[in-house]
Image 1: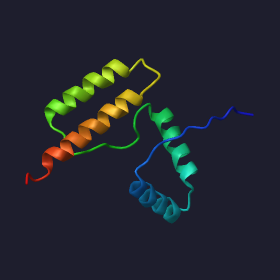
Image 2: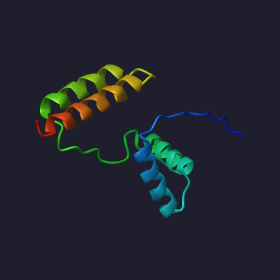
Image 3: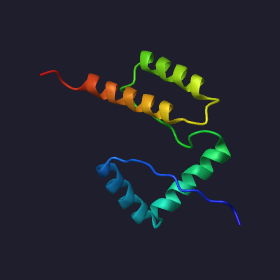
Image 4: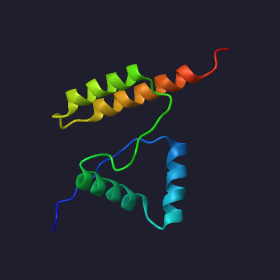
Length: 99
């Protein structure tokens, strides 16, 4: 029997509700969706879909690339995802109208 592990993730509650509705529509459970994602990451050795955000500028992409390079040999990728989240939030804040 294969060894299994539990992994917890914090999610935005609205995004969670929306995603769970999509999973239900597709006829799969959230756990099945996560396992499918992980399986595709292993098979492709990459994120198995395009990540696009028109609001990220070249400076932010260079920061992200530098962060990714420094975490490539690191087993803990939390810092990478924290940096990605910060860049996306920074980018979204830059696009908001000034009042």
